[in-house]
Length: 188
Figure 1 (cartoon, one colour):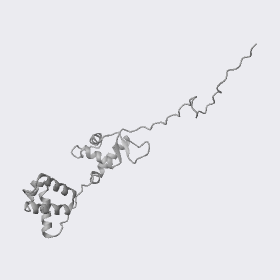
Figure 2 (cartoon, helix red, strand yellow; figure 1 turned 30 degrees about the vertical axis):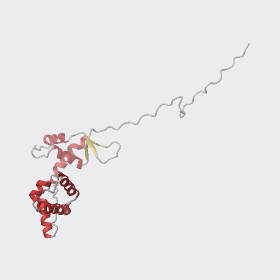
Figure 3 (cartoon, one colour; figure 1 turned 90 degrees about the vertical axis):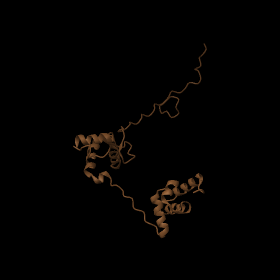
Figure 4 (tube, one colour; figure 1 turned 120 degrees about the vertical axis):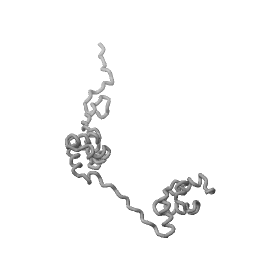
């Protein structure tokens, strides 16, 4: 422990951050064995690494076999778990939405915020507040269903072409010829 100064500890932390999976566990286990006697709790205290990760790395090092990482469990989307809620949201949002006026994206724009959609579900579809997900979840659902919560944009009319100016060289209007020379007067 006396060999480890703050600079060395920070260098090892940085090296561990650059690694992932089994390589990271192997590195953390080696550092733990070389400098801290293979103690996962002391390694956690000194380096801030998870003692469970260090312990798993020590087991892998001692057995010589890599322990497979557990697959991450992903939570199903709310609309997959409750398709009726998704249909009710679409039914409420569709009248207040429009497609992109320039047809540049696949999203539709809606005036309704997630909070307003939640309130309408309670008001018109007889949901209770406890049955419904949080506003942020409803906002995420709207995005996944193809809606952006923005002010509905009006299509802007094209500007009229500018009036031709007499000094313009592209003017199509005929102009009387300029009089360069004054008309001579006859003397009497």
